[in-house]
Image 1: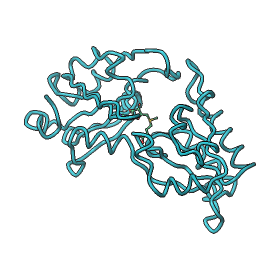
Image 2: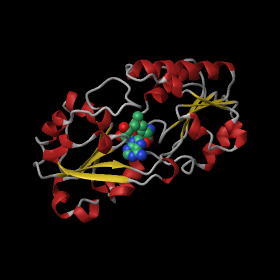
Image 3: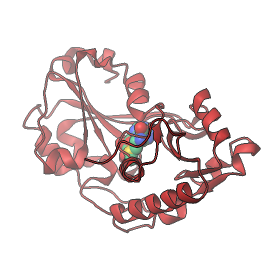
Image 4: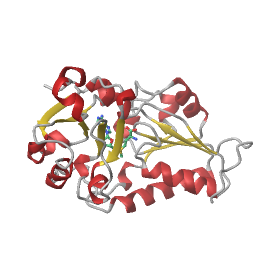
Length: 262
Ligand SMILES: C[S@@+](CC[C@H](N)C(=O)[O-])C[C@H]1O[C@@H](n2cnc3c(N)ncnc32)[C@H](O)[C@@H]1O
């Protein structure tokens, strides 16, 4: 069992979320912490970090260049984690600023939380707006009616259970079937195994939506509806940066309006 760090010590490392639409989703608390840190390490590109006020900008270090295209994602994450740990070692307190919520589908944050606490550091996690929040807003769905959240490829590979009476969010459909980093290339996943897995639970007319919430500088949100049977015809443009929203079986017929289906 790793140490949970020393809560009586000042944090040496903060795990912070940039929200989905940057910089407008930054919370006041996150801005205060950024101001108090000696170094801000981030996987946001430099062009995004340049939108921060000058007192923060001067402390920023974009680690974007460490993410090498067509390289195993885990290896990229390990190298980025090492760079942040090194900064926290030499110039604390340090902030790790990452898209969305820092602990929602973020392997680097998980590495930092475990490694930092194993070193006896106080590592503080601050909540932030996630794509889970923005997608629910885009499709108008209240998770009081049930919500499953999975990584799309893990769902199929691990045969994870779907509950048809609940809605499901499947993250990273754009990386389905690949362990490599595809940030720059227009790599199109083969979604037929995902379609076939979902067809065990829903009929082929069941509507599903690739949702991309508005992110940087007010780019328009995109909701691309497809019947489940046609899921594999989605283009790289439909899937890029998106999450797949699968409404519940009960609501799919009548709930088009409630859940934003056509
Ligand atoms: C590595 S995860 C990071 C999630 C992030 N930590 C968060 O809380 O939003 C990346 C995945 O989040 C989802 N995602 C990120 N930004 C999104 C957006 N603007 N609209 C829809 N989904 C998004 C996509 O499924 C994408 O493949």
